[in-house]
Length: 480
Image 1 (cartoon, rainbow, N blue to C red):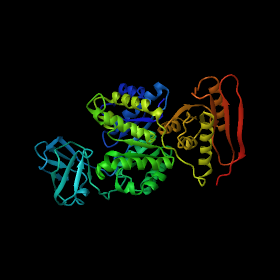
Image 2: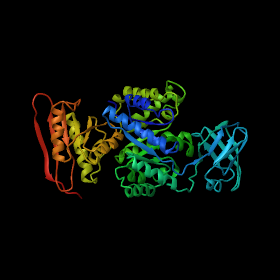
Image 3: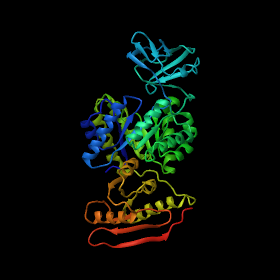
Image 4: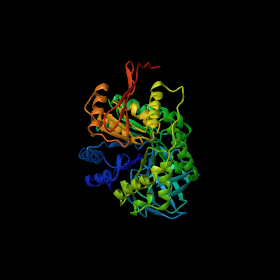
């Protein structure tokens, strides 16, 4: 089993049972739906397919719904617009335009026109297309193409180096959040996060909808998010390095440094971190990746990321299954020789974090697999956050908990029937001794973590002929 998890985006190229099934067989465990594209009916169909495949394989697959955020996107074009460097196009407040030779780009969000000024540089298509504002008014903005470009429907637009003061969650996105909550999405990706207040806003919405089990991925993609990185990492459940938008807001040569910084900060805080955008971008059109893409993937694995996410490669590409197979092959080839960065422990950390560190350290010193019975998933996440070199298996009666844990590097999941900690540990031990749960290590450390007023327990089992046990702990744990 590879430790680094693979996420894929389900889109027009992959929204079928056959392709989702093949991507899961190839190693994908996280399935993303981009709410910037498609309809509720199409999203619901994708959810149904993923859950069918999950049931067929008897595994756990995480569903991520990605909110559009206050992104600026072109409207609908009947035909793409082709422009050469030096030519002019117009931005006008429309939902739809003819396109083609009529070089008019519709812009549904009229508020954006009011903030554009002469000299602003607008980037589209992940920065491949660049325009400079020649003149601007509330009714029309004239752009001069700085590069050859092809503009098509719904392409995102970024004003280089500037954060537009737009609401993080629009009225349309409120309806999308309600849909995601009703469909029991495991994570919602929050776009264009500026600070902890944006995460808190979405958290409040989820709580009001009774969707407290839906976690939040904060996407780091604009200057404000980089500036307020630490508070965002503290507030969110997971972090995503959105390299596409980072590369449009910052000089391209800065993106590797930003990626390393965001990954490092997430690891320090024990939060799962995802790297996305153009990992295998050439495979949108080609059946094999480039050499530089292979190097890029290996570098991300070396940094210790939890998840590598394919976006356009599987959403609109010609070779979605092949892209997953290649990503798995690269990770499998290089991961065993990589020692990723580790989280250190601060003596001032809370007692639960120090307990998790102790379990991870004990297991590594014994070359023992870690099996943790968990109901909420928090103990498993704390342990996994220390990047132990041994196997980590999370066991829970909650399918939703196990799905969320699929984002964690190196964590495998097993569903059990027991709903109490003591019974859960007993069931877990029986499954190990009967061979229903297999581990690579000769010893297993079993734990159910810490609870407010009760005992914490660690049990060590030496596998093989006979069982030797040692109980550790047994004291009441006081929560600070």
